[in-house]
Image 1 (cartoon, chains in turn yellow, red):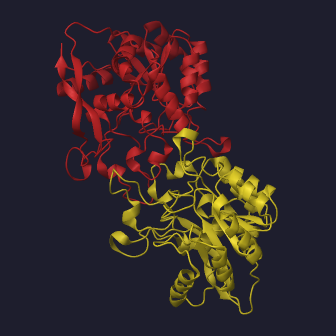
Image 2 (tube, one colour):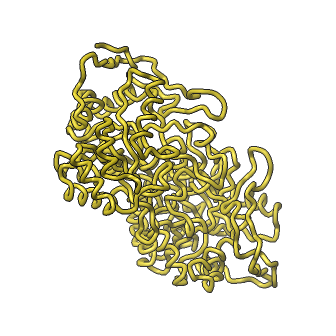
Length: 312
Length: 312
């Protein structure tokens, strides 16, 4: 996630950030991305690809956390995309256009309004691998399905569970893109159940502290994001089982994404094993202490699965 | 508002509640309504009408504050509606159907899904005066316009201002029905600007205490409602001026509603006078103290109008 402060826009920054992450847990293989911004050049793309950076992420201006410097039009980036296509880098899209009363655009239809941009990009750069990140609508699922093998789509765990009713008045279920209509959620569930190889898990987990979620001020909105990391795999297993897609678990959380990113399972790779749980209640008080503690999704509720350990 | 605990379902309860209100401010004329529920009989309707009660309010089950006992089907109430038509009582409708994943119904389309019920009721009881309360969608505006002179519609101040983007992650802007798309807000503004006589202000102001709005718990949603009472008339003047409808202020806040309810301006009636304000900033800390203080809409923001006094 390059939407940090400051944003990660150069190879050096990305490598430094990877070092910081690896110092925390050296056993994880971190796939780094750069932030699409006017500073990014075709030369930098080739340099980044050489250094093992796998993608570039685009945020339309102002639509998510720390995206004030996001893009407004893709035309200016065509030389960058051409370099990415050549170097085999992946373009990761936050697929929403900014809200505008003049065009009746708001958080509910911002994703469908983005899809023509995706179609145009794919038509212009058919070999460029593109991931439409954290899709939330039937329109997005159908659009990605209709495009070629270089276009994939990630789906979060929480969007397989939530609809707009769940985040209405409930800050901890509010994220961007917002969860949509029941039929949109059904479309996400259906494409997972179908086992479609170009759809895979992208957690988009956001550990906002308690105080930035609790609406302490009537004059400002809370932070957008849902925190699923500590329960991610048991949660996904639980949700997939709820709509009859448990047999698609491995492909959805691991196989499809690895295949699209061209990262075969390496030697000595660790397999996570899940087992049924009879008493896996998610911590309702969350993690940490004081106003900065972080409350996860599914807090206080039961999950049917838990991490059983690792296997080689 | 009969959606109290316990609900106001009999003439006695309504008169007792009116007495309580008049003890607080005897200068106000309170128009009382009963809660539509299985206990209500045609006999009770005639008794209520005799006692000066003007309306009956219907809440579909579970869609707003304290509506767990609300109606599920109108068929059973046809004898009550016939008595109301005869007695000249007004039917006040909370126009939403309950959410249901099976029919893709959620808080966003619950109002359009209710409109066929309104059409059917009006067709069956063409002389029954009906108010579709706090409408939020273009579909509702167009439906009410298309019906006969016995069907009117109330609009809140806050729905003239908000869209879904405003309550996404902002508890103090969350109410039911939720504010919808920019085009829906435009339709509400347009019908006010048009000066349509069957559309008038209904504040639907809800003074929920701070602690029930601040999402203190990640496992439960906050109370639904926006509190506008202390600033209502200056706010409406401010909003109408913002979309060029200031000349429609008196009809919208007073004349149209009085005409529909057949309440001509009585002798000795008091007129509220508004004047331009250069420094009317709405209290950002709200009213009262401690966790039960109530924060109003527009908190901390400026209004272009203020109450200038009363005139006979």
